[in-house]
Image 1 (tube, rainbow, N blue to C red):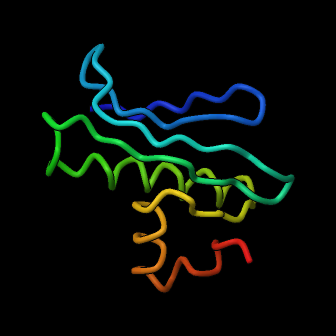
Image 2 (image 1 turned 180 degrees about the vertical axis):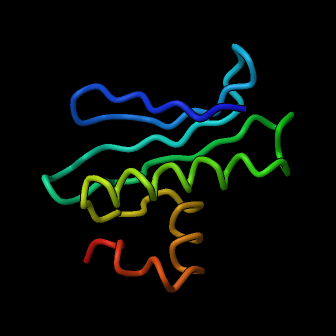
Image 3 (image 1 turned 60 degrees about the vertical axis):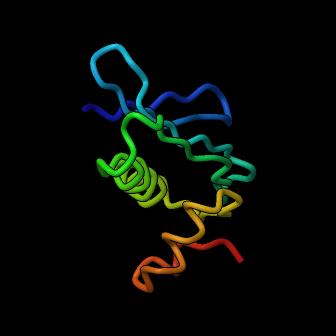
Length: 94
């Protein structure tokens, strides 16, 4: 499994590939110079329970830290993960 980052202008996604097949995706949009809005996360049902959601989430966290962005979590998965890990609360956009 490999996570790839695809970005075009202000929209992007992290995708997990199993060979050529897309096994999961986390989509986002950079809505301001300081805020990334996490829109949607989806893992193909054949890959559920294999930690792909965590792989996508971790790639997102690494990216926002590198770019010094905050996250507006519209995606329920990202919101739940951020709320659960108090060490990441500083990344949540006000």
